[in-house]
Amino acid sequence: MLTKNHLERCLIVGLYLLLLTPLLFQQSLIHPLITLKTVIFQVIVEILAAIYIYLAIFYKEYRPQITPVSLSILILLIAVFLSGIFGVDFYRSFWSVSERMTGIFLWLHLGTLFFILRSLGNKINWTRYFSFSVLISFFAALFPVVQLIFPGVFFDKITGRLSGTIGNPIFLSIYLFFHLFIGLWLATDFWKKKNNLLASLFAIAAGFNLVVIFLTQTRGTFIGLLAGFLFLFTTFAFKNFWKTKKYIIIAVLIFLISFASFFIFTRDTYSFWQKVPLVSRFVGDLSVGPRFFSWETSLKTFLEKPVFGWGWENFYYAFNKHYEPSLLKYGFGETYFDKPHNVYLEFLTNTGLLGFLAYLWLLFVVFRGTANLKEGKIFIQALLIGYLIQKFFAFDTLTSY
Image (cartoon, rainbow, N blue to C red; front, side, top):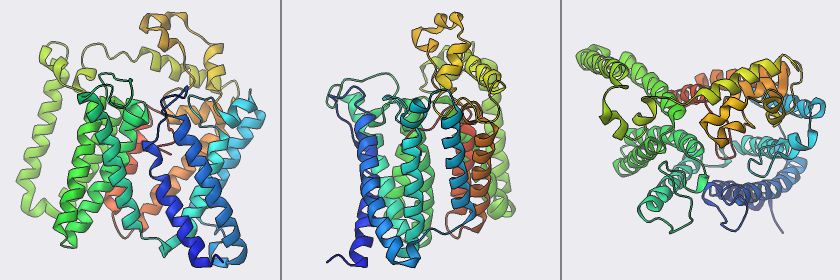
């Protein structure tokens, strides 16, 4: 007979299995890098949900607790669901499309996962859990590097920008972005505990993730990284080292400002910038015209449906209503937008003011909650700051959710 302890172990094993899903792909599927990992993720969550419901019925400590974060998530889920009901296409809102699979159906799984994680409390070793996640991120970063060196070893999708099993350079960079800061936190934590071996391993993993992020050449993530690192630098500098290391700090700041100024004034004239990965995407024509048009369309169409929006995942209809033929000059792919490539505008257009304010409230509650963290506070805050900034230029997928 399965006891409470057995069921708890099943939950924890399932949660570890979820961390493996970014590595999954199936070449024979129409969307080989999306379908399998999303379906497996949902199936595992559904199995865990059945176990969790059983535990919640018979054991009080597993029952959902009303906290600011849990309440914010419930409000956001309701807002997203209402947007689907009052939107243009509920079917698309609920199921999404095969190339995204980020509809309300996935959101229900994510909400369920949150309450499962919340219920475990100290029953799971969180340091070990995050460590395993960083380990998986290392392999997710290693995969596209091997793929670049040995083309065709895994599958045929090879471009100048690394994407690996995540399927898109932007999505890979965001996934690794989380684990870069978590890896730095763990490295620092193990260093404080005098475990130099683990500290070194996590520092290497974080450094490798940083290199691969650079090779994805994702401008939005790079800007988010700068913001996160700037927060870390200023926090550590002025909190701990200003009195003894102020000349070093001033020298670093002068160097960064000088380099940024030099790059800004020479990016259109110096050909060597074109040869540097990622940096080359900031020189010459930045090719952001289509993005600006999608942002403009998002704001325009929000005013047409300001309360509940067009419905989650329905930006496709809003964009097509105001289709701009001149976008063809940027390439055929730039004439199709099902996302505004800005999370805040995505919520504003798709879910209206109701969902947009609910989303902002969740972000506020989460960030405010970091003040109570006992471990990794500065790194998690830096992660959130960088994440909030990069969301001006991208949208979320399963791996970042």
